[in-house]
Image 1 (cartoon, rainbow, N blue to C red):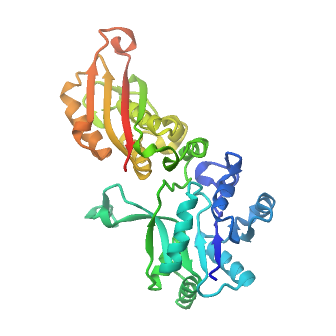
Image 2: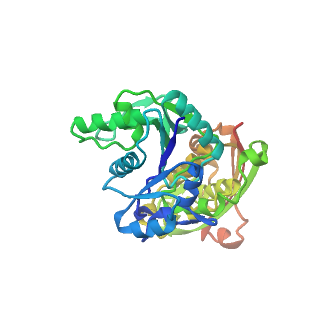
Length: 394
């Protein structure tokens, strides 16, 4: 009988999230992120490589639910340490299977894991992966585009990654015999380099990884929102509303709807202060139940200082599209006494449609004054409202 094992690397220490401890120990409902990831492999022996300085904390946290292993300087070395520990304790047979899964991916579906085990037993190796939704460009060392890649044949590699034991260990042996200088970013790269075929397994639900501060909003909602399969969410449209306000400031460029507009003043903000795109982003997040723009892009983070809001829109849409959402339509209203916006509305529609991967006809933008009433009428600033309708792809 084929035995199954799991390795869940938990070596990251949360520096990108500004945490004083590993992000895998963040609370997620009644569990932590790590405990939630462990539930998908509760029926198999699990090995968890961890930062050496936090070993005692992980041992106390996991108890007898997993074997804690000292991690290495890289993820690659941490997983190798766990493979060695697994080999010493269980001496797996050549046809036994091992799954390697990032601790920071707690959004799996148990049915997907069960199906993947069976597929790996048949094929020998597989990785969870998501089809690319962005247009992909290959560039040279100077950042100049060389070619556009066919995204219909391109996938984002994720985890779990599952392998026949003999394939994985043979790949490590070859790597060592060749000097061990190459550090692979995942085990699929290691096994692929050995010449073994690896199958792509497309999960049925968003398999996001918790990496940045804005991902924290997912922790608050992911386990309280029923899955699409459980609620017929695939067929249910979702409506979101967004509203934003920014005051005018001299010496600032004016960006609206992703378009730069010549004007005497721009809008004040931590980013480029594109009031229209900020309202749109909030509407998208609201429709998907993902919080708001402040959670995703805090205004006390230097990485978002003066950033173009088109970049923020791309990040949000990449997450939503990766989870199966498509835009049905968007209706956006910009409130501004000056300057005149009518000549720029068509360019805004085209820009937004490009970033949301939809037809221009799905985007409607209106500009209105407030008949010189209120802060907009006094030309102190601008406001914007956005309403969107999302639906999951069938």
